[in-house]
Length: 128
Image 1 (cartoon, rainbow, N blue to C red):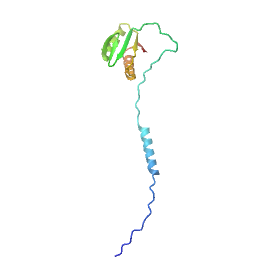
Image 2 (cartoon, rainbow, N blue to C red):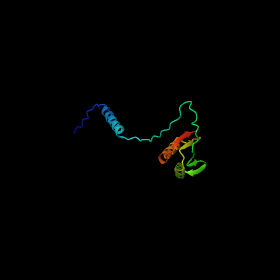
Image 3 (cartoon, rainbow, N blue to C red):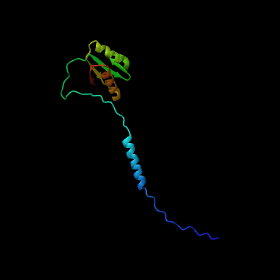
Image 4 (cartoon, helix red, strand yellow):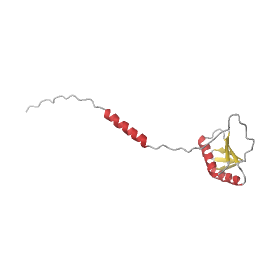
């Protein structure tokens, strides 16, 4: 019995054009169907250039130190500080100022401003 050697076939190069199309479609699909995190906005406005101090003394001074807040010199945890702010507001306080010092993160400042605005009706200012 005679066995002939296999006829050598030339291999054609594999076309990756269709693979690229599929990857592009998958990328487009995942980009269009993904959701992005929505961040809350806190409006902080500053005075106009050249504007001096308003002349009025704030009713409440808040200083942020790590997880504790200092409300008119009294160091309290955040929840108790918010309760103290509500008490001061009920007693007649209308304005408050947050003192920002070195080492305070922007996230802590935004969280404090948001908590105070949601819990009270105090006119809030931020100072360095």
